Length: 243
Image (tube, rainbow, N blue to C red):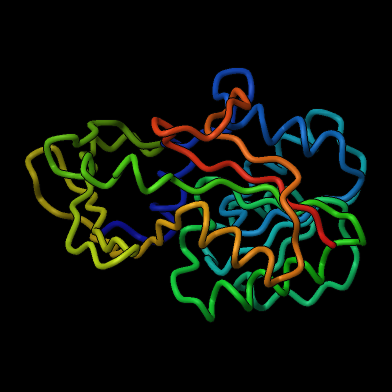
């Protein structure tokens, strides 16, 4: 078996936070460094906030995630607040300058009710004029078409185990994609299968939800270099401000 703790450690290996190497990490690092207080929604193992603290952020940092195993790794730093909860379960009131959702975590909000409740809670956590920064994959790029076993990754985890990891799409229904992530031994012996649903919102519907929740768009980009959204964009990067 491959445990939840093993999976959280593997996530850190596959998604190491490094603003010096990854443009998306650098984009968020700049926003976090400039904010006095930051709430990372869907913080996972806490890599972004760990990096911020290690690199001199002296303000309030808080991470929120429903994944207990991921938070156990996040809590290796005790100088950051960690809360086990969904986005909709956040209970802060006007306490943060910036809220973030990185790693396409926003796409895990699949239903309209989840989106509305989550955006309402995030807005409530922000001070007047506070900003919410996040990204979602642009549906026009059809990223899920590359999620198949032919694109499997071979790697060695922190425990020295050789692994093969791949994804496989089960269904595409309207703007929701259901897929599995499989962790296996190199010979194909399956250790773990996780099923995920992600929502691929286009710009128009996305902005409708944001406006309804009391946000206005401050900036919108189609890539991590702050280029505009075009017919070739793979990302919709949004910085929204609380009205």
